[in-house]
Image (cartoon, rainbow, N blue to C red; front, top):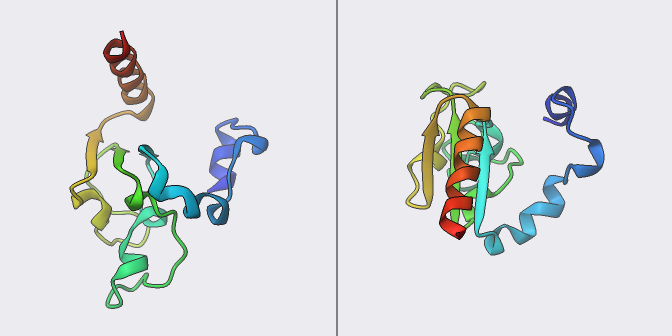
Amino acid sequence: MNVLLAEADVPYEQLAEMHDVNPIMTTVDVAIVIGANDVVNPAAANDPASPIYGMPIINVHEAKTVYALKRGKGAGFSGLVNTLFFLDNTRMLYGDAKGTVSALVAEFKSAAQ
C-alpha cells in the first residue's frame, strides 16, 4: 500500500503504520477509505471461516463513522465481499475518488458555516 501512496506523491513522512493507528481507531470520529478493500475487511479480524482470517488489517470498522470511496461495487484482489461495506457505521460513496473527496470537503465546509 505504501508503494501506491508513494506513486501518488504522498510524502512518506505523512504515512502512519498499521500498528500505530489500530490502537486509536475506537477514538476516531471519521475514517475515509479510498479504494482499499482487503486491507480494511473486518472478516480478517472476526470471521474464522474467511480465507483472509488472521491477515493484518487497518481496523477502520472500529471508527465511529466510515466513508468508503470506491469506483464500483467490485471485490478486491482476494475476490471477497468486504463486510465493512455493510456495517451500520459505513457510508458508501461511489465514483472518482478525487471528485468525491472534493465534494465531501465542500459539504463539511458548508456544514461548518
